[in-house]
Length: 327
Image (tube, rainbow, N blue to C red; front, side, top):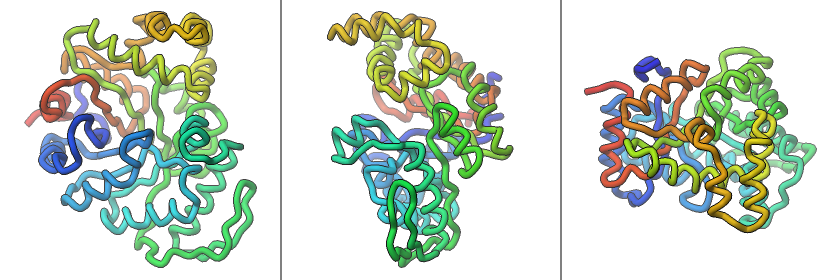
């Protein structure tokens, strides 16, 4: 599939690197004009998941806004419900709440919480949010936390869809049974079919969101350098490492892991084969990037979210080059 106009939805990742939030206004307006449908945030050590979306809503953006993802440990259940309700009010009918477990480094190392029983915690949070965002009074002991006498003062007129970040079988099946969609990342187009098949065991009709790293550059050496720095970091995070072991890449990643254990970061990066880098990180000319992104759509992704790297200069140039339809 070479024309991304056939993609059900095509989104961008906010905020853009090296662009202050006040500078995003013209970019968001142009993104809508170019045919982009969505703007999704992540939550690591930069902006939180909700603030850039609130800013986009205040600017009058008509894009669908989503969190991909808001962690279930770094906020209490009630605060997470309040965050979501506020975004529903700011962008009525256009907000998607994406939640997930995040990682031990972010939960324990950065946020002073305990990363325990992630599947159960995500499940319990999802069930609590369904009730709270419907305006119910929640007074219940869940397996991983208890909520006593909470009711939203400003419940949304229409509760948002709730998506789950999922990698392996347990979370994928939970998303298939109880969520409205799934959020994927750090996978190849060829991996999508396996993941979507497990999701589908819970029934059809789920939105499949995938955030894909993209570097629109005709210089493969430069693009792979950027990709290796990112991938070598993420593939050493246990949750992503186990995901790729499950996908059958354990032996392929062994040299990187050995170099990392020896403390040689540069060797760990070099140990990632070009074929793996190219599968997990889209790069090339804009036309080549569009063709590669189209493979994700053909494999079952319904909402494609690009995260731009090393594009240089004005990020709108890359947005224009990758636009889902030419204007």
